[in-house]
Image (cartoon, rainbow, N blue to C red; front, top):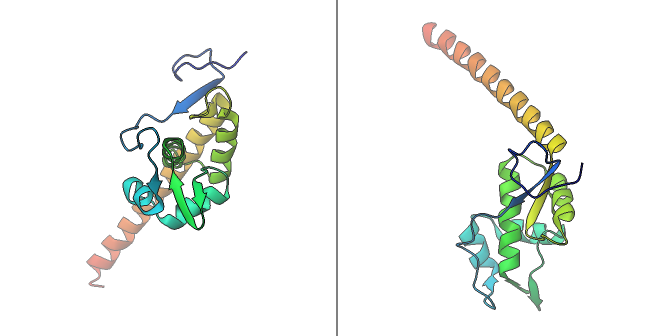
Length: 148
């Protein structure tokens, strides 16, 4: 079945594009952000930006040691942060970014199988966290009732 660009609730899709839906912080055409502006506006460190650059996820304009970020870099960073929020690893994000390059470079390509895999992983992590929380609560009750 061919990939499609429709939202994920269409069951005939094998691939969905995740697009940046927050463009408020993007500089206007021809305006660039410095690394400190980019970091502060998006809640990341300059070190994280340099790391994303080293992995090919963003490509700021370089003038000597200075970096200048375009609207495209802002869009790409927002996609990376969105994918991180969904729990994807950087390696997975790089693969999704590379798959999204071309006709729709401002998106991440997410397959149905990858989406299901991520849901299962997050559900396991949630169950593990709930189990740990219950155990800690049980221990806390024991410590409280014994005066410890």
